Image 1 (cartoon, rainbow, N blue to C red):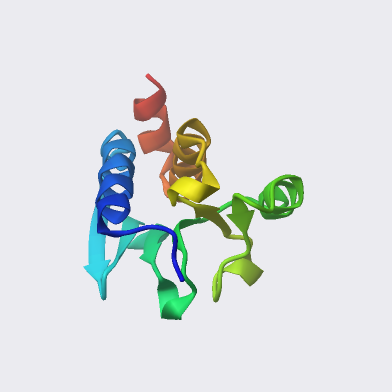
Image 2: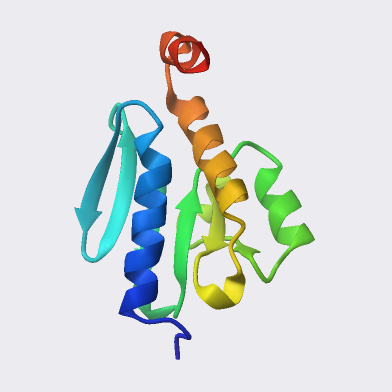
Length: 128
């Protein structure tokens, strides 16, 4: 049974949306209680709520080669290999209170995913 409730879902969603707002051209895509975040039609992250009954309140985020292994290996209580996209290197981040998410790290992971999908021009404008 999940150790989080609707208030935790709303708080995590609001926090994520605040982080996403600073990343240019990212569009939320709500589906079946989950929210995907897309840049130019490419999904860079998912906010998932009890995905197929897994009991997790989490963010799945696109990551570069090696990032998933480093994070999951270093802190398996906070990070995990998500279903479906895990074999492609995505990393799961627990967002429930028990996982004690490091929101600065979540922000860095989102920006990193954004940079992986953004154009060089968009990155240059963002950095300026």
